Each structure stands twice: as C-alpha cells, then as structure tokens.
Length: 517
Image (cartoon, rainbow, N blue to C red):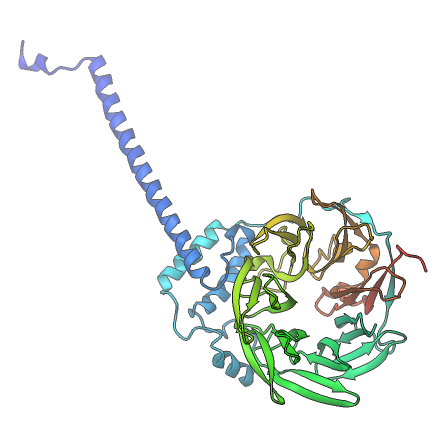
C-alpha cells in the first residue's frame, strides 16, 4: 500500500473527525461558560455579602427589589454615599445655615473619613442598580375590599374658627381630667372639653401634653422640619407659672412621665426623634434639677410604653425607633435606673415603622406588638405594597414572630381597643401617606375583629376620610356615653397641592354609636 493511500480519509472518517472536533469545541465552550457563570455567581455572592456588611452596619439591610431602580439611583444611593463618607453632605441638598452646619459636624452626623474605598462603593452601587426593578407594583387588590363604616358617626370640627389651619400635630385625651387637648402647628394648645379654649401658647408645636399630680407638662418640638438643631423644651405649668424643666432637646416627639423605680419621684422619658442623629433620653431629678441620661443614641425614637415585660416587678420601657436601625426595643430595668437593651423586632428602613401598640392579642398573659409601617416621607417616596399593620406574637420569652399582616398604603398610626365591645381587639389605622389618586378613603381604616384565632378582620372605611390628610389619632370616651370614640387630626400642609387647597378641616370626630345616649 502506498504512503499516499495509507493516510487517505474516506467520507465517514471525515464526518467522524469533524464531529469529534465539534464536540471538543462545544465541550470547551460549555466548560468556559460554566466557569464564567460560576465566576459571575461567586462575584455576585461576594457583592451581596459586601452589600449586607456595609449597609447592615447602620440598619437592617433593605431588599433592592423593594425600591424602583430610579429612586435607588437618584435618591437612596446618593444619600447612602454621604453616610459612607464618600460625598460632601451639602451636595444636592438645600443650603444649610451656619448653625445647622455646626450641629451636623458637632454631632458627627456624617463620617469624617470614607468607610470604604470608591471602587468598592461603585461595585455596590452597580449591584443594587442591577438587582432593583424598574417599578414596584402597588397593592394588587384595592377596590371593593372595604365595607362602609357604620359603627361610627363622622363629624368635622374646627379648632380655630377664625383661622382653620389644617395643621393639627397633637391630640391627647386625659382619662382622669377628661381634658381633650389639641395642638396645632402654630404652638397653640386647645382644650376641647366644651367649646375650644386656648390653654397654652408656646414658640413651636406642642407635640406632647399630660397632667400629673395636678401639674400640667407640655413639650414643644422646637423645629418641626428635619434639623440637627436642638431647640425643643419640656415645661411644667402650675397655675399661671410656666417653668422650663429642660432645654435643647433634639426634636422631641413623645413624652412619658412616670415613677420608674417607685421611689416617689417621677422620671421623664423623652423620644428625641432628631434627624440624622437622635436619642431616647431619660430625665432624672437630682435635688431640684433634672439631669439627662441617654438610653440609646439612635435617631427616630417616636413612641414608648412603660410596662413590666419580664415580670420581675420593675417597670421596663418599650420603645419604637423609626430611623436608623428601625424596630421595637425593650429596655429592661435593672438597679438605679440602669437598663439593658434588647432589640426584639427589627424592620428594614423602607418599611417606614411609625407607631405601635401593646396588647395581649391571644389572651395568654404575654404582651404582643401591633406595628404600623408606612412612613413615606423619606428618599423613596412611592406607594409600597409592604406598608400596613403587622401583628407580632410573643412566645412568652419576649421573642416575637410576625403572624399577621394587613396592607394599607402609608399606615402611620394604629390604636387598639375592643371598639365594638364583643370581647376581642379591634384596630383603628390611620394613613398619612395614602394613595392620593385612588385610595383617599383609606386615610382611616377600621379593622373589626371577626376571628381572633385565624386573624380574620373586616375593613371599614368612610368617604369622610377623604376630607383631610390625617397625621395624629386618639381614642377615648370623649362624649361620656360608655363606648370608645376616635378622633383624627388633619395636617394637610404636606399633601399634594390640589388636595391641600380645599381641605381645611382640623378634626374628624368618629363618634361610636354602639351605646346610644
């Protein structure tokens, strides 16, 4: 056989040879693709871990899918860059006054040196943009889900008949004195127990008021808009004497006066909501002067309840922080007004935690938590389907599990009571950030308990809720007929212009008609 014929390939051998080559090429491509995808997955996992580490250092890590891509890019991420020390805090912000700048820098609200390098930040930035959706759909079911509110009879009230403000910031009903106090944005506090009577005027909105041992206490916020400047003051009012008890509070929004350690002297718990910084503080009287202790230096403290949570005979503090590391914290009292802190419920910042109520929902002897999520005045203002009210059940060890969620756009207040007097808890929910286009009636939602065990509630709304942008809410037997009424305070100064221009009601009184006079 000639050498030439020895290496001659027939058609079958050529096909086999080409097939082998193709298989080798395809295999190589598949291996390369697999290795590339594995590398990409590993890179994505590393970026996700970095995102959790850096963002989790300040608050619970937000889910990129919960905020639209445009808001991440234009609002949230630029502010995050400032918080990481990567951008001048004045960039893109209104011009700060010198006093504002002083307090921002004094409080070290922004890092003086970057917390990470610019390359890592850019990778995190790109990761979030990649994972974020173009849009987040609003609540899928809205129309027809609410029944007409019939248990309560609505009526509107004007506090200042000469100049209705639509700027109510505080409603407080005192079960002992039966005073119904209403504060407006101009620093005026009215007593509504008969005809509106001007009780007190201060320099800024009075956001908290209470009578203890015949002495009236009032707290003014100082500066209502977000600010680092501490100008809040708490006063005692005895007859005609107004005495400042403590000054330079950082945007206080809630005050509780109670004898925490049962020594016969009242302490003052103050939620200093603040802005970039803030704190939960305790005023303790030493001789004739109140001294301030910081219980937790964290912005957004907005409400407290005082109750013995661990059954050791000592009063504990349950507090909600609505900024920073958002959530419910229990301050367990030890000796000498010292406390240990336990964050029992933490929420992502996009949820906008704004109010809570304690209740023994299942009657097992342990207090549960009803939480309102819906603050929408932040860097990601849009209608969020995860806003609403959440019920957390206590397992008896102050460990809480979310058992029920009812979605309501912009829910910002929640009250608990047996409003229909049938032996179970009903919920009254206020929304300061409703769907202004298609859901104004859900500015107030009454959730009537129908089945405690299975968490079944019937939602009731009223068309009258469309006549205000409701910021505050209070309950009580205002008319003295034996059932619990509800009152809403209108603050429409931040509402859309077309809404704000025509809504000048101060109060919506929801008179419970369960017991007829």
